[in-house]
Amino acid sequence: MKTARTKTLLLWTLGALLVLRPTAAGAAKLTVELSGSQEVTLLGAVNRFDADGNLRRPVDPKATIDAPAVDFTATRAGRGQWIFADLPPGHYDLLILAAGRVRIEGFRYAPVLEFDPFVAPDAKVDDEVRVFIEEDIKQSRHYENRVEPLYLAGDGKVVRVLVMLIRDQPTSYTPGAGTIRHEIWQYTWKYGAWQKEKRTRVLDRLLLQVSALRRWTWLWDPTLGGIEVGRQPVAIKYQLPGPSAATKLKGLVPY
Image (cartoon, rainbow, N blue to C red; front, top):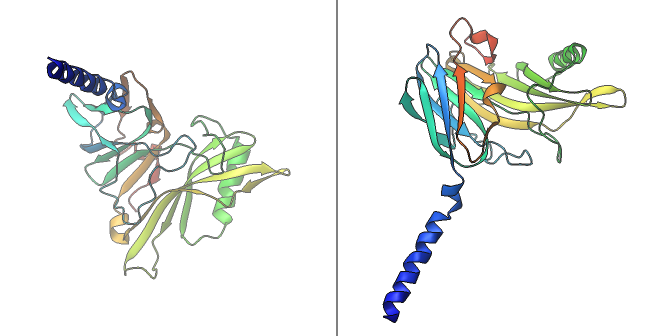
């Protein structure tokens, strides 16, 4: 009798532990309804930053443009719907791969300096400040021959910039190879002037043949960044840009 009671108690305890597992209890469903003419081959979610704005995984020097690393992959559910069944609570950047060498990626204006907060994607930058920063980047010397500010957000004290850096001229790397990377830069208002911080936040760094790089479309969209998932289901809709509307998003286009 004592043995039977012990087994019963053990089974009850194990059952309770399974029910209380945080991974099961904290997961939620994210449904993404995609509409557009392009054929999507992958919809992934990346929990890119921790609460302090640090990258959760180091930048992979062997990453490839057509096989990005994602934390979770959505399942196609029909009628344009894609479902992430069990996402732990967090903020996710969505990443879309589509036919025709198309990549669309969400991002957040993560902190560049320690103890700084994230900057909201809709934080407006004055036109005068925008022009100054864009011109400052244009006139500065860089190893890359293409350095383009894609998006800016901030206020009167801090401005963050998503920057695309491309080197498609001959290098000491493999013959014919080029580099592309994306970084978050910060300009800070100091002593009556805007100054660029030396530190940057590197999001990715890829090495590939220039001939292949020039055939890709790699666009960035802040509306696909920082999707907050808690304990309740989340549903969003997203219109994929068609060929004629692709330039409305910023990033790499075939050239």
